[in-house]
Image (cartoon, rainbow, N blue to C red; front, side, top):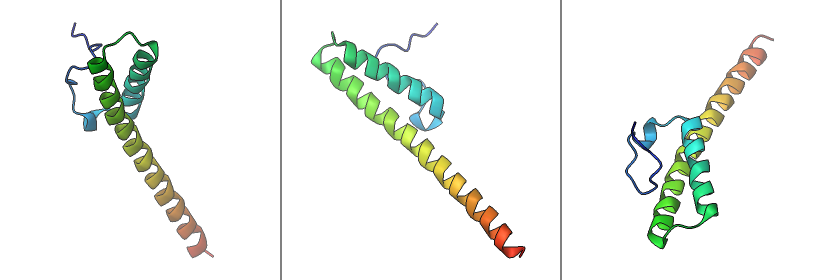
Length: 84
């Protein structure tokens, strides 16, 4: 029954433990809250900072996925050219 909607609270899990989808969904919620307005300057800054953290988590996941794809494609290409 823990509520995680308070934007300036410390997350219960370290950012590095967040999966891509969880970080993306949390980032979308931060953006929604910022777009809706009605928050104090301090709350808006906390939301923005959290959004920046979540964006970095998402980017690390995407960079890792790109590296894995590149490695798989390079290995496939090496196997194809080595068999001729």
